[in-house]
Length: 397
Image (spheres, rainbow, N blue to C red):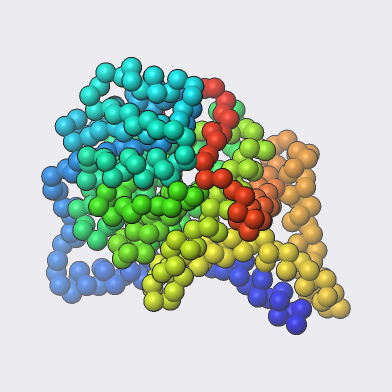
């Protein structure tokens, strides 16, 4: 029985982190071959991107005490390469008390609109601002996220396809004091998976810093919803529309040096992820097809990773009468030792530092999932969010 538990846990972990991405690569290769074969047989040229009239776009930003960056956000938003008569910026202030509202009101550009209300959480802001937006396409972004000028045009061209309901942009994280930091490798890995999911029309969750939806597809969220940028695209996917990825639409967001608050952010997201299961029940069923496969492989098994890691280690302890399982136990303990070295910062540079840092990031990420699951069980995670502390700096985009 211990051997069965060990292999079930090990194979589930291998699938979610390695086999699932490989399956995406394989599917893309097969799809490309089939497409080329059809094109050769029919003699058709490669279809170009349909050039239709640009839709109206509303950029909606939920803001809570963002006085330190809201002016930069407005300047960045108004400089986006999109026709002024088809673009607006809606700042939904969630009871800001630091002067954010006043700074927005000082902006004289008629495309900017402030929507203030008492603090009730980001979901309430979106429930209020998205239906009242004027644009057919709603672009969602965070106050501290700076968008590249050509990103909006690259995103909206996908909506020429009536089957596309949401488009996710590419979020690049940066650290003002570290050229390379622990999250960068994992974030690149996640972005690659999103890109290949997008080619199947089934990106499982968006980057809150930059994604767009058809306003007509938005449905009111329960005010207690914690991870809106995860639930909104999933509901669109569940309803039968495609959720695609545009790697050319780039936004930039600063990561934090405060690892305590970063751990809390991850735990909050994890609690919201577990909460989301009741909001998108259709994606749990095999009848949903590939989106269900992606949801189970990319998300559900990831959320189970802390339990699977513990199960693999515990079951391994009962299998030490064979050399192979002594090796697997040593490998597991060695990995956790690397994570400990990463935490203690023994290595200051080089491959050893990178390896220990990645191991530490992986372990803390899964520890945050476990904490988030506990908060979910206790229903103790607030929907309202707090700003993450960041180094006061500026970046050009």
